[in-house]
Image (cartoon, rainbow, N blue to C red; front, top):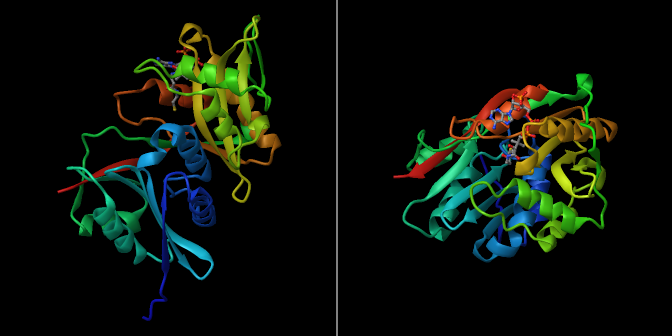
Length: 296
Ligand SMILES: CC(C)(COP(=O)(O)OP(=O)(O)OC[C@H]1O[C@@H](n2cnc3c(N)ncnc32)[C@H](O)[C@@H]1OP(=O)(O)O)[C@@H](O)C(=O)NCCC(=O)NCCS
């Protein structure tokens, strides 16, 4: 078979997001590791501190993006390859090995992405089953429970001018392990990154006007699927049902915006069970898991 030539473009830092999202959206199916919201969140929320180390390469056939690889850390590869062009997986893995830094090279895929796994295994990567992993969880939006908001609190979508408070609730929920570095500026970047929509970004507010819980959903309109990323409840407000309330409110808004189902990707291993317990308590069902692969 004659393969058409492809053109490769390399980007450093923040550049390349739109190309990556184009391919992820065009080739998305429930067997895909990434939703275009994963890329929006990961790239926008980490850009101020990590973009200096990012390398991205995009391969095009004519005008169309057919493959990309991203070193989200200097030695860690994420990639998307058009399943109709599986031969490009070898090309991306070769680029990764030439570009990556560090003693131990690693890559992440969903267990269903056979074309990516084949290329990694034939390049010498092996599964690391001791590593933490993530499990996709799915919910259909046709039979959602109603959120029941505790007295003294209210739930509503965030406004465009509330990036500072929105960043503060993220920090209040994500500082258990180490202090979250989420700044107002980074949150403003998230809120201006396609396909962010403030009507899908929900918060619980206390009587003092502080946000105490949040849930952000990214809608892929082409596939009517929303990605829930991230969700957090301030430590002082946990185990009062607010994780459920803010999720359910955002999921109802997703349905109104045209979504038919939602996916979320919490840890699947037993090292961090609380997130999947929350999603399963709302009705999300587990699906495919991620695999972590190491070279050598
Ligand atoms: C995960 C998190 C959002 C849960 O928020 P929450 O408001 O405490 O959750 P809820 O009170 O709505 O809990 C609903 C159900 O989820 C499960 N659950 C929540 N936290 C749990 C925990 N720490 N351990 C076990 N199950 C838990 C329970 O089934 C709970 O129902 P119950 O209290 O009647 O037993 C919160 O712990 C948090 O912000 N963690 C840090 C950020 C994070 O991990 N986000 C999710 C990442 S994908």
